[in-house]
Figure 1: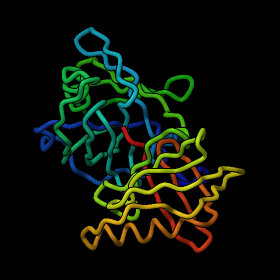
Figure 2: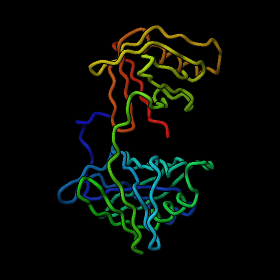
Figure 3: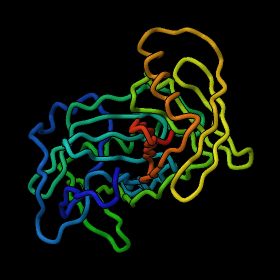
Figure 4: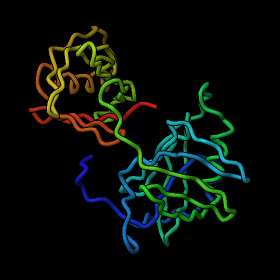
Length: 259
């Protein structure tokens, strides 16, 4: 996403989480205007720093974050499990609805923390307060809080990039290795590896070396588009957790940093 794009602004920020009873929250369209001096809201990856509930503060894992889209949807991670939700941003408050999530057990993230974060974020409506340095605090009617900060750009090298466009059922991914000067991963069906030289906002990709398996048609279509990036020069842009690759022939590939 272009850093210079026009972003929806509000004096508030929002976060979302999974709970089974979100139907009680409002489902009105998101308010895309601004109230007073605006603060960028949509298109930003907000890191969850901590949750204070019942007088106890819980530090969030590094992977906990939320991103609000221009269409009033929210997506992100509670620390281990990913979620999507509808975000109602109106009247200077945040309400959530229609949330769905994965249901995995992870070694490095406490299930108790995820439940606390989920419960706190759905005790809305949440009242936001801007903090120095670009942070935000969301406060529930009971006085519990969630502290957010703007996430930093993920590094191009060493990050596992899961391809989202073209769609490949989440199976296509790439990782750039600065020591080897290569990129490797999966095209959705077959493994791939190639030389990769990064310089001045561009990546020169060598000829792709791949395995030779056959998969269902949708995966092979994704693979064909991804292969068109190789043996050529592509422009790249990292915007927080999002990577965009654009080839000289106009092929655009988008990916998100893996959790």
